[in-house]
Length: 311
Image (cartoon, rainbow, N blue to C red; front, side, top):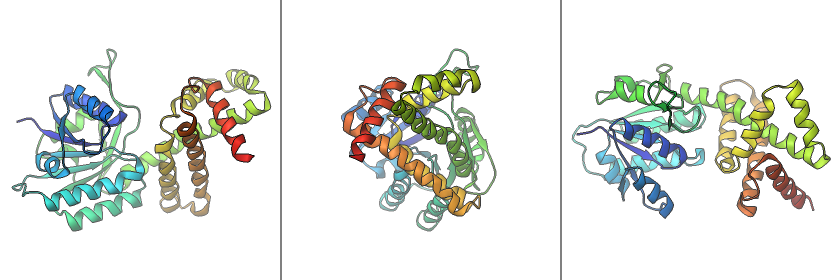
């Protein structure tokens, strides 16, 4: 029987991971209760098996990958705890839970302690995802462009008894050590740079547009900050559908930098960055993304939304 991997949930990243695993002959399942018809259709089209309850899912899995918005990470872990408590005995079969969400070390440590107390037979793995969803690629030697997946904790994935070595390679993992929180902290440090840059670009471009100097700004970037314009434009346009996910991620980064980096009050800057993404998410929800296909469209709609809030 194929190794069975449950994915919670099937968003853009979860779907990409599922397709990668299916291509390497893993059985992939998910719980589709309370999900939209569009999500169910995406899962079915990718060959993912659909289950109606968490109890059925955890009973069938060798591994569970949690890939949800940061605000839902704790609740998703609790769902698995409850399902393990309510479900039938697994007959001694080990279950590995990989938390791959963008959360702080302290949050993931809280999650790990809860599992230890309430689901002692579960093997918890701290992790993160750095990069975009997997996709087939003719230029990669293994046929797939894959994100990096740092992992940490006392139960290394590559040592898991059921396909652990192979799964660790397929997912492009990197084991950082036995301490829970290390992998999540690395993800926070990376995202602070990549998404922090996006927040700065949103504010800079929107302000320049309001002043009527967006084009000169872009032209100066071409000359004096080579490569930054292209990166900024891609991130500004690409973040519109993700901004709502990034709000809590910025709060988690602030907690990481305060608690692990010693920045204390200075780390509150990420609360302000969270507000930038919340503002964009609110505009997207209210106005839609139809006019946000390029930089001018994004900053135009966002700028107009900000002006309305001021009046």
